[in-house]
Length: 286
Image 1: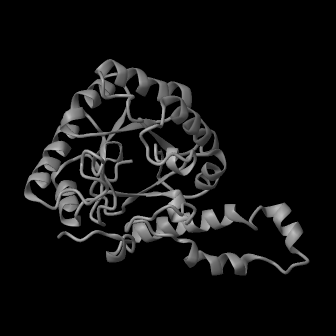
Image 2 (image 1 turned 90 degrees about the horizontal axis):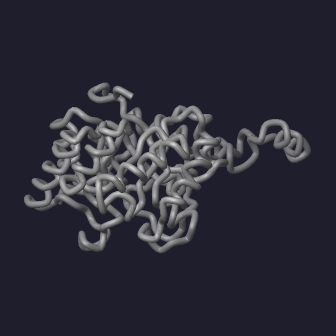
């Protein structure tokens, strides 16, 4: 996963269950995140606050069984790492031992650097998460773009530096102005991923349910639904009505699994070619 400076962005999607994980496993996707957003998308919570370690273990184990060939990152839920380094190590170790995840992700920069270093020192790879951090969005003034002002921009640079120094192998930037994301990406040696952070990063993350248009509650500016672009391709791949039953039984390419695969492959292609995200799916600097 040595993509820093390679010029071809990595592709990363969230997933929360076995069946969608199987679809992702059949694509050229680079990474899967079992995000605590699964608490909203799959479990019906209004935000990520109630999500527990047990629920994340349950979701992550299902994804690992569905995608045995992918690099999977487990998302540490709120309350599982903030109290102490030992809590952080214990819960990160649960992720690795009980689910087979390859790495964990946690929110926070400078204030969580000691937690990151403790987990890394225990032998577990870590990705940080700064910018808009949903677990603490209320304290940040709600869901908004982070880093447009000089003070917030400077703090994010300090956050990124502290995470790299603590041993994180990457950081996720959420809802940042593109110019700031580009500055962070060029200033540090670890991998910089973005979700709503513009195109000048080392990799792009999207929530699979947004990519498929399966989460109707809201859709942020950066979330592109790829289904309209592949619907015609899917329709043309189907045989006539008389052949359709046997086609479906023999290929399983007659429904949502195939639409998912096509949409994900398009996301991968557009990301790696630089078509996504364009200005329609990026925030403005000001």
